[in-house]
Image (tube, rainbow, N blue to C red; front, side):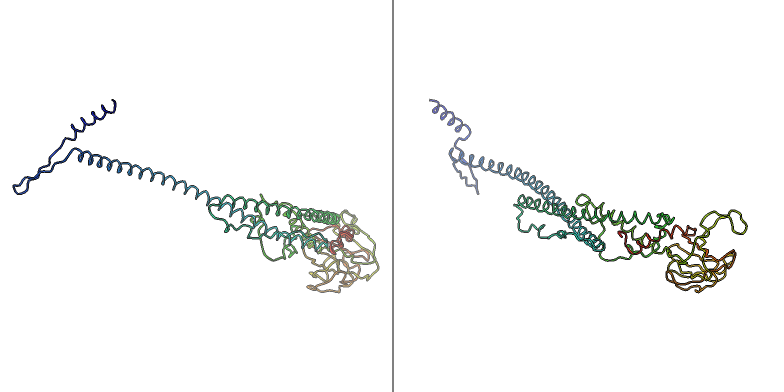
Length: 399
C-alpha cells in the first residue's frame, strides 16, 4: 500500500514539474515544434544533476587531495631536513672521531719516542687507525634507514670502545713516564737548590736556548683542535709534554753551569759571604771563594765557554773571565800567569793560567767567583753540587 502511494506521489510530482512540453521553432515564416516527453525531461534532468554532482565531487576531491599533498610535501620537507641534520651530525661525529684517532696516533708516536729514549720496553698496542669503510652507507637504500642507523651506531660504538682502550693503554705509559720525569725534575731541582740557583730564574733564561724541546719538527696536529675532550682526555698527555719540555729546558740550561774545580790541589782559605777584609780587617762582602795552594798551581776553566776578559784588571791583578752561556760566568783573580786571550773558546778544565798573588792579595791563592744572571753565587755550593750536576749532564739520574 505504501509503495503504491509513493508511486502515486512521484507521478503527481512528475506531472507537475515535468509535463509534456512542445518546443516551437520559427524559420522563414515556417513554424515547427518538437515534443519533449516527460521521460525525456526526467532523463536529461537526472543527467544534468549527475554532471553537476560529479563536478562538485571532483572539485572537492581536487582541493582536498591538494591539501593532503601539500601536507605530505611539508612532512617530507621536515623529514628531509631532519635527515640532513642527522647526516650532518653523523658526519661531524665521524670527523671528530677521525681527528681524535689521528691525534691519538701521533700521541702514540711521541710516547714511543720517549719510551725509546728512556730505554723502556712495553707491549705495543693497537694503533688508532680507522678504516673509512666503517663509515660508508652506500649499500643501504633510503627506505632502509633504520637498519643503516643501527649499523652506524654499532660501528661508532665499537670504534669508541677501541679508542678508549687505546687511551687507557697510553695513559698507563704516560703515568709511568710522568713519574720518571717527576723524579728527574725533583733531582734536578734539588741540585739547583744545592747550588744556590733558583729554578724559575733558570727556566726564564732557558727560554733563549735552542733546547731539545724547541729543536723538533714533523707533522703537526693541534691537540686542542684534534682531540674531542668528550672522546679522549688529553690532560695527562699535555701534562707529560709540558713536564718534559721543562725538564729539557732545565737540562740544557744547567749544562752551562761551571762545575769543574779550577785548581786540582788547594784548600779553602776564605769562603763566600761576609768576612773581615785581610788588609783593612773591616767587615766586607766577599763575592767569591779563596782557594789557596802552591805558587803557579795550574788553574783550569770551570766549564766550557768564551773568554771575555784576560789580563790585568784592577785589584784582581792578572785576571780571566769566562762566559759559559745561559747567564753563567766564572772569574779567576790574582793569577801569576794568563794562558788564554780574549775571545778564545775554552773547554772544561782547559789550562787558563797559574795561581799567584797579583793585585790586592796578601798570599798565593785563587780568587774564584761564579755569577748567574748578573749576581754572584757561592762557588762552594756549586762545587758541592757538582756530582749531581754531572749526573744531569750525562743523563745518569738513576745511578
